[in-house]
Length: 252
Image 1 (spheres, rainbow, N blue to C red):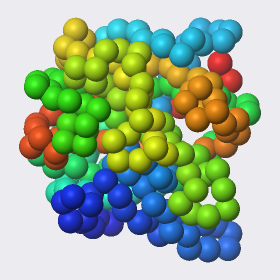
Image 2 (image 1 turned 90 degrees about the vertical axis):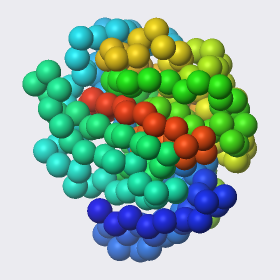
Image 3 (image 1 turned 135 degrees about the horizontal axis):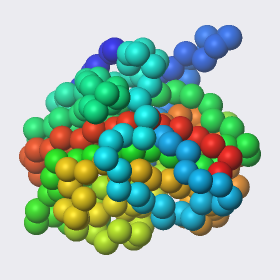
Image 4 (image 1 turned 60 degrees about the vertical axis):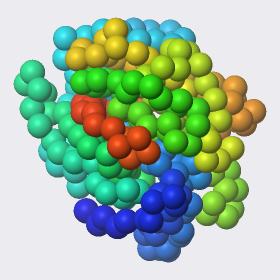
């Protein structure tokens, strides 16, 4: 899993070279620590039937399912400011991803095409051990979150023509609120969880990604380029631990 650093002050942008089969063509992607302008991140669990509202949150005793296959093969890591410690562990008999930051920030991403026409709904489960105090999450200096999950879509022929949505566990911004990333207008932030009420508990989330892109960008997105997860505390030198269960897409 290659890891490289970007000078602080520039860590919210990076260039990633990815090989695409079958032609193995290398493309360069501009991205943000939440995917401001590129691809990446994770999802999970099927909930009920019919159309799922864009605010589904359920408290659970354990993760909705196991994270990834049996290893992190297929996932890559990129450092913005030091390295978040990511590792697969067992929790209540399920394999989950644990991320711990101590004033650091790196992202774990997966390049993967996702058909949103047939699978528009993203499901995942997560848990955090704390939120952050005295923070302005809508400012650059407060752009730290104990847990993030990003989805990225290519909207043009050029590598940097991408848009991203960051689903975050906010510390102070109210649940349900959304805003433009302080680093780029190509990334929207959505607080799907907020505050300490469910700290230490697993929660299961569902979002209709197609509806979110339509609402926040006015675009009809039919395919994702990739997704990512992140646990970061670099801007405010903060510490937190988050756990992610299975990440999945479905029709409803």
